[in-house]
Length: 74
Image 1: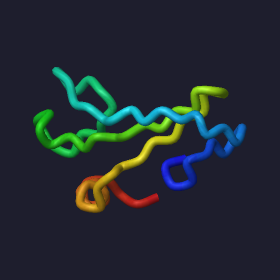
Image 2 (image 1 turned 90 degrees about the vertical axis):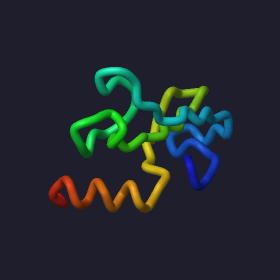
Image 3 (image 1 turned 30 degrees about the horizontal axis):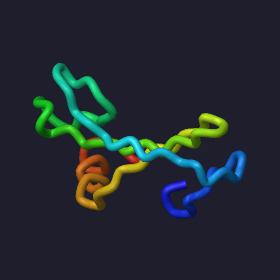
Image 4 (image 1 turned 135 degrees about the vertical axis):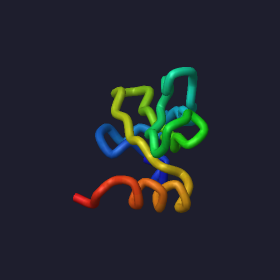
């Protein structure tokens, strides 16, 4: 959805971008890579307002690299 601007499930173009955020005690849409909330990686959600399908993306290549260093590859 991020790249095509279209829902892959229902083909709707009525999409909502929900920016990642880090809140108190690790709340929000993020992935922890350290001991503080300042080291969390924000995860952006894309939501189809027609069918409810969602995708999640890490926006920064640098953040992807941080995750690759912290977590093992599948």
